[in-house]
Image 1 (cartoon, helix red, strand yellow):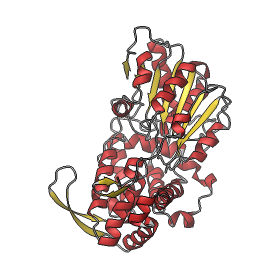
Image 2 (cartoon, helix red, strand yellow):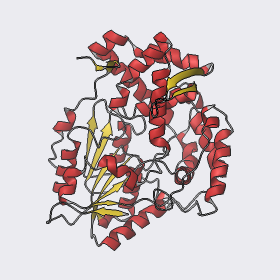
Image 3 (cartoon, helix red, strand yellow):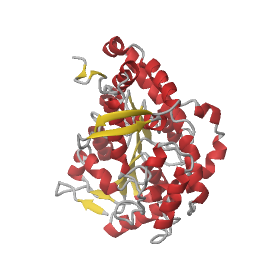
Image 4 (cartoon, one colour):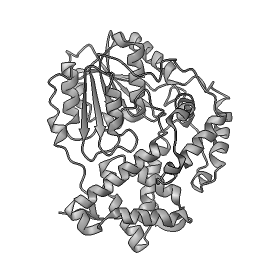
Length: 423
């Protein structure tokens, strides 16, 4: 763990504990990108980072994968790689002991050791699940909570991901149609998406391109899974989403897959080393996949999305062999709390859409939902969110909190050429 002392000599008694997403990202890895947006909070509050057990330097459960079989759409590759990872990790860890139910107790031990009577929590994505479960277990220890991309306790995360990601993609492309410059340049980019989806379903294309990290010439096989991954991860931020109509147009109209392939390599590598996959498997195989049955999955409908059922099928392979860990009996029960909670949501979030924020809010008697137009997963770096969080934590209440600056924010404009957006 790490404590970054407040700048002010007269700091507030309640620090902000920062909870990273994933599951599997370490708070210490996440903080460099969060430090600037949290600078206003840091003026008067300590920032505390705890690498959740199984992440970062808390016995990080990292797997050394051979990705070639995964991206070649080999159905047995995911299970085979998971088995190799499990065998390696079991030589130094009981992998079952890395669930959220145990992690929140660790978090409270850190709070007690540092001598804080009460704390504030910021959680993003999976970190919102940790924040809510900590609030459930230790309500008297929490002063205020910020949930960014909220995961409802009742929901098995991942079951609806293909549908949510498809909706987000279609909303992004529809926004291009409504934008005069984007529409004039690309028409309806949804047509290009459908054509490419159909083409790549028949088999991969060979792409020759300069490596986006070394500029050395390289050749790669770009198939349906690569396409799905670049669409999914590019939907996470409005800056990356702003490139999608241009990338689709280049591949569809000109047969130039190099920009799409480059974007895939960039976004994939940015996440590749950030996630402790062993910890992620323990969390997902304990807290989510066993509950997919109650979600009544419509596999035919899922198969029509760009993600399809490949990821869900892969999770079932992994969880058939991965040990399950401790799960509190009330883990998936709706949360009921009077603690002040600020909920941040992106209108085009492909993972935790605004409907999830509204579901989370049902049992929160002192909450405010702030939904940002055209943004994706995680609002921390969006305009004015830093000021909004500072004001919320200063007041310790959502009552009278002015969020109008967030409602005026607009997504990054679409690129109409590789030189950038239209003038």
